[in-house]
Picture 1 (cartoon, each protein chain N blue to C red):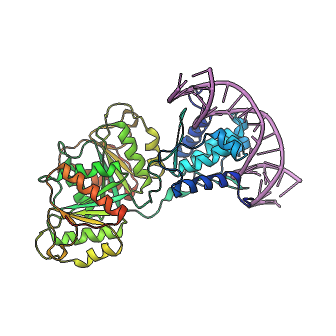
Picture 2 (cartoon, protein in one colour; picture 1 turned 60 degrees about the vertical axis):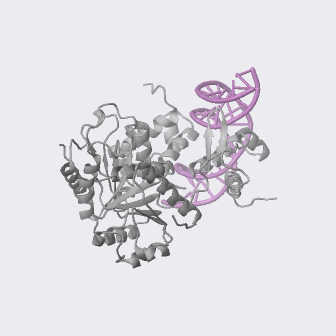
Picture 3 (cartoon, rainbow over the protein chains, first blue to last red; picture 1 turned 135 degrees about the vertical axis):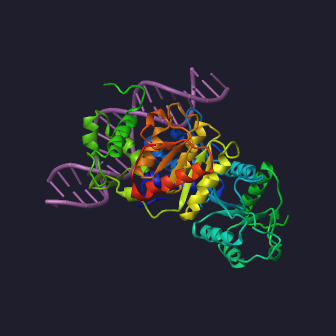
Amino acid sequence: MSDSGKTKYYVLMEELKKEIISGEKKPGDRLPSENQLSEVYHISRHTVRKALSILEQEGYIEAEHGRGTFVSRKAGRKKGSGNIAVITTYLSDYIFPRLIQGIDQVLTENGYSIIIKNTGNSRIKESRCLEEILEKDVDGLIIEPSKSEILCGHRGLYDKLDFYKIPYVFIQGYYAQMKSKPHIRLDDCMGGYLVTKYLLDLGHEHILGIF
Amino acid sequence: MSDSGKTKYYVLMEELKKEIISGEKKPGDRLPSENQLSEVYHISRHTVRKALSILEQEGYIEAEHGRGTFVSRKAGRKKGSGNIAVITTYLSDYIFPRLIQGIDQVLTENGYSIIIKNTGNSRIKESRCLEEILEKDVDGLIIEPSKSEILCGHRGLYDKLDFYKIPYVFIQGYYAQMKSKPHIRLDDCMGGYLVTKYLLDLGHEHILGIF
DNA sequence: TAGTGGTCTAGACCACGCT
DNA sequence: GCGTGGTCTAGACCACTAA
């Protein structure tokens, strides 16, 4: 029964973390109160608080004054860079500002940020963008192909995305060689919202589909 | 002499933080021991530790068992991420699309990328944006203050930018408390181009000026 | 009003680094 | 051996939430 070698708060912290990760305690569930934990584990309340403070710091739980301590609703999310790259042909023309607004909305809701690039509809610049993106670590990519409907001149870069398991979605067009990759046409803010939700699903579930 | 309204650990924490940011305590310097602090401030050692734990968590100090507590040396920062954050109030309205285009132009020329965020002109969202930015590592920040000309409600976050030596430039307004920080008004693509050049100069040469 | 988390005290013992 | 930070106890009072 001995938890040798470890500190008391560390033992309790790991026990609670295990319950959360295993699913025994689900997001939104309430933990026993600090007094209850101190009784059950035969440790002082201060030691309980030390254990809880670590879990709170790491994002597993959230304490609410007067209400209790709860399992965080976004627990278990692995941490990538938290950045999604968005590559369009132009930044300020047509519907792109609103498109980006829609994308930003759903990304912010999910704790991601946009890294924005534009190609000026030039395939050379698209290559450069993709190379930059591959150097930084991004969690996903939304790209409007430049001069679509034509051959993709840098297939190798997209292969690299596949290799690194970076999910990507085409918008407003696709390359003939890559019909099997997800792509979508959209024309407003809502479209940006939806395509981004889809991308995040890709990242979380690693399931591919075709529109 | 009363520091009314705040908790004791918070008062001590801010006092120490001020000394570090102002340069009174320099990186590598040793802080008074926990016992000394508890005597000088007439508070218990536990309360001192609470204050120190926050500073340690935020990266200002580092405690070494048996030796003492020291101001963090990490003012030097790591290699650049190549990302510059741009925080505006809105994404698709007014001149922002063209502004961003101008910013992107000079950043791309210099091998940087934009991470874009928007606040919806809400100071609460501005806080969240700044916290996110601080977690990722960005090399610089261009920010349009939300509800400018009013008091800055989260001065601490900007202090942190200073501490980590992340250069930032205000556009379209500034907080009254921070008149000495660089700011600029601009109204088009060219403005975005110029302000960004200026930011990069800040980052490269660490020279401050006032517009 | 009862229960919760947040702050704070005044102790204690331990593990570590130095000299 | 001495001072340092790290762990831990057994209390106390407060602020907040909900029944």
